[in-house]
Length: 297
Image (cartoon, rainbow, N blue to C red; front, side):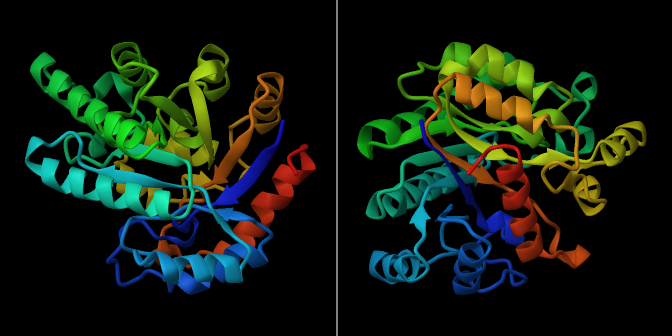
């Protein structure tokens, strides 16, 4: 069993490819390597060069392996289907060009869901017809990634989208064939949603193909839930903290992975708000050192 620890551009505040606040992609590769990581995610497609030769040379310069990539688009909105497919195919092509394995599907933030992030009982629900179409769009992209590109596709629950809370995730898992759809499990988003990441892992370890390591500040979480704070403001208040400083039981997470014989990448995602003057290199180093201290190496 070999567990490898990577990082992702979102740890440098990169969420959208064209955001003018994004750091230069080359500096992110350099920082990631200097913080001690050997792998990195693609980030939003279009952030790093889509010319394989350019990115291949840059990855090699920093001794980094491309791990996977995320399609973070509006699966919930039928009017955005062309945009979803564009993101999916471009991401798949980039991953294949560099021998990466993991395609991660995330329903992007919805104005209908952002106000109730972390509060499952209050969140607006889709109608049956909406859900069926939403599920089918996710399944279609999962099939594209698996069958056309030979990738391992994982669904990733994410706060403020329509694939957020544990019942929605488990419903999708029941309705989509596990041959085309695995789980990219994000510990922090599961905690933010109000559920126990370790309990979920115990039930679904056989379907988890990839991990995102993220932690949640319990004081900020309690405050934003009590005050009914929306997702964007919660991020601005620092709900995502460094690993080991929040409420996720990472030693238990590690033990479950070890007991299951999990082999492959686990990626740190220290989501940060660039307006808060973050220290992404320092956070990346601290997160790696924390994981090493509990037995990841």
